[in-house]
Image (cartoon, rainbow, N blue to C red; front, side):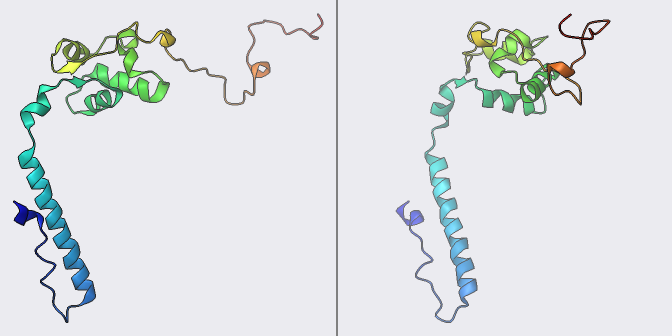
Length: 156
């Protein structure tokens, strides 16, 4: 095994080799050494120990789940709300209607840890909303009023 880790190409140098070719060979042989190291790490990796621990459901995990080809339409739809409208993944049970089927599967599985509950984020009690003010609106004075008649003076 120690033999695989030691670069064996450094002593095999031609005295009249083109420096460009020599640099390319050096880069290639360095990549070969990196590949050998990766193979040794894979051989020593304990797959059973890695999968014995449950996976915590996080925002990143939910993005990966929503982007996979088999994701439900409900999950993909809620991902668009997270991306475009400021919703949070942790609020999916509160605001997604219907709740994507993946959520029940994740919550009931022993292989995943679901730490989000509808009550866990009190700061997000209402869904985010967008305020439309029109294309030329500057502020409240430019917004449409609900009055049928606008007074001539603010003193009236």
